[in-house]
Length: 139
Image: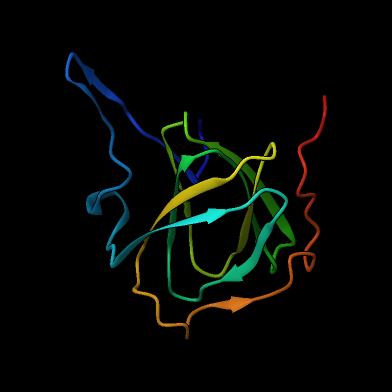
């Protein structure tokens, strides 16, 4: 995939099992905190923005619809990430973002962030502030 936000990860398999990395400093810069957050079905965890912090999402359970919104350009990106994809989604500073679990299942994501959480770099808006359809489109 040729997307500036998504980085595909190579899976290394052998007779002992597998290994894949989520991120590394040489590719993404500094990492000061790593945590897991979960999302219950039918919940939208949005919107929030960081002025300094870079978020790096890697889904370890379930499926997420992640939305990223640039208020300045009025642009919205939507990404579907699931535990079977080996991808890291990088969200740069100054972009509103949030997510919801899909298909009625709980989801968990590892976030590898550039700055340790202190509360002074997190700004919030209600989930319906920006134009985003939090459902999957039937085709």
